[in-house]
Length: 84
Ligand SMILES: [Zn+2]
Image 1 (spheres, rainbow, N blue to C red):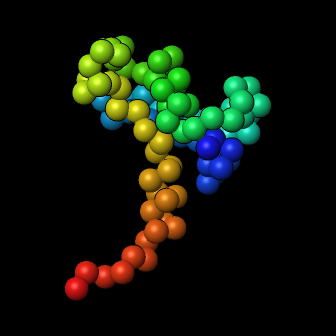
Image 2: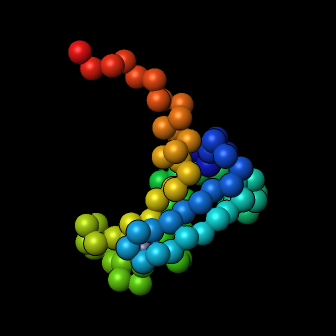
């Protein structure tokens, strides 16, 4: 959920259109209520995503993603068992 995001700043960026936005997590929760990260990303894309985004072709959607989330989650899962 949004309130459990591992950073107080949420950065959303898209490699396709170069969009990059930073949000304050707590302000987002206060403004729109708590919700899943997937729903939040949908809402962000709908507002500021690629202009070529259309909802009837999921393969041509805005490439927006949570920029920090990959790094933050990567740090917490960085010690996996080595391959044998
Ligand atoms: Zn985009």
